[in-house]
Image (cartoon, rainbow, N blue to C red; front, side, top):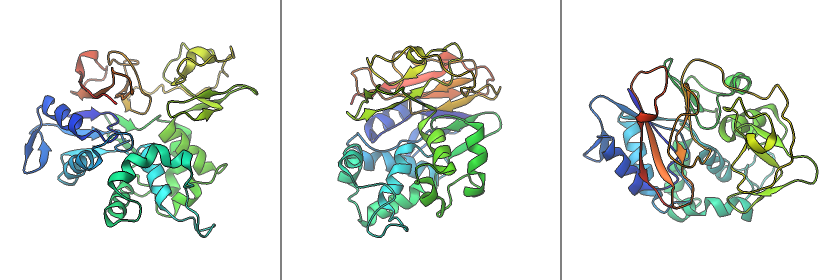
Length: 306
């Protein structure tokens, strides 16, 4: 059975506390459970101040067979930030701009760019799969998007990890692979009408909004958009072909900064990311016990402020 754990973002102490609450014991530096495995939904890094503690816990668990994980958009971004652009000498696949460095700085403070430790961690990030299909459950960072999963097939190995040569193509705005990775790791987005924008949680101006692809009742943009704060969005009706996950296999994901008391989004859909910077931020897990219909009572969490 599995404990699916939400976005950690460099909060090592909260992670250790949650694992203990889930009855994992630290034996010789490895958190383990006699009957269960943890699954991390990605976004191990950025924002927090305990990256080494968090990453050591996760990596040790995975290397000893006590945990599984998928890649988050922050790990993908970190790889591209560290990878030279083969088509533009002197540049990187992710531009070293103030906009890109600011949310990544907390990780770089503990793993300086170009250091041996940094290179080792980036190499480890490359071993993270884009998704896990465990037959009874599925795990992805942002959305189980069937068209995108089909597109990435030629670009992944048997373990569902991106091939080394895929990163360049996946970083090219406008490429089919770029769009597929955006969907899987960052979610379904909708371009705002001309003249509309909002400021995101990092202070960046955005012209697209993330959609609640899990909410079949949300037909108009203001009710379908998520992570937009108090932004005034236009009363636009969404296209009927907006992607929805309709499979019967339970799906777990992170990424979306949910708020309030953790709970399911449908009988087969659960988000475990409640990592808001507000005072109510939590590190959340779902204790899956084999059920086909997910249960609100199976959520477990600890406070994780900041």
